[in-house]
Image: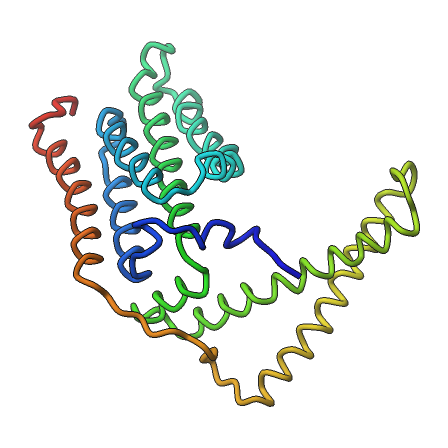
Length: 258
């Protein structure tokens, strides 16, 4: 079966897609660290970061609707984390009035914006290359071998789980046409157990086949990575712009809001 819910936009042609995965990993995580390191309550620098990330999204050609859908998935957790900060201040003895909580509300907004910008960057990263290529890039960047193997196996076996979910859903619909009116909990519980058992049996068979063919942790067909000069130039340019905004804010040159 064909699945496109993970690597849906990894086959697009764009300047971001053509970059080496190691370069993209370093650039994205460097940008996230720079954004998160901004002082608490700073809003104006985050606007400049958002503008740069929006340009990156346009260059990647990943649909903005897809990125917004990913942001909506994590938005409840982000908003909850941001809202609990002023609430925790209100529960302390130092709380006087809502007017005294203006700095805390600014901190909450900055936390939410930082988290959303990080999610957008990670979404562009995952959508701009195949997941196994990103894993290969992390392996070349000296990621622990065990973590790489576990991540690769989870990535491959999730398709088995999805296949079994489609098959059991098709079988259930053929036996019980229409909407379920009674016994929904029991029906879906039995289906979930069946999906788990069938996926477990198939994964055991696949793993035994891999071992019989000499699998020792390295997957066949792993392509060789090569970093071009243009890859280094674009990644350094990306990081330097983020650093320039961060250092300008730190020195109070253009953002005298500290």
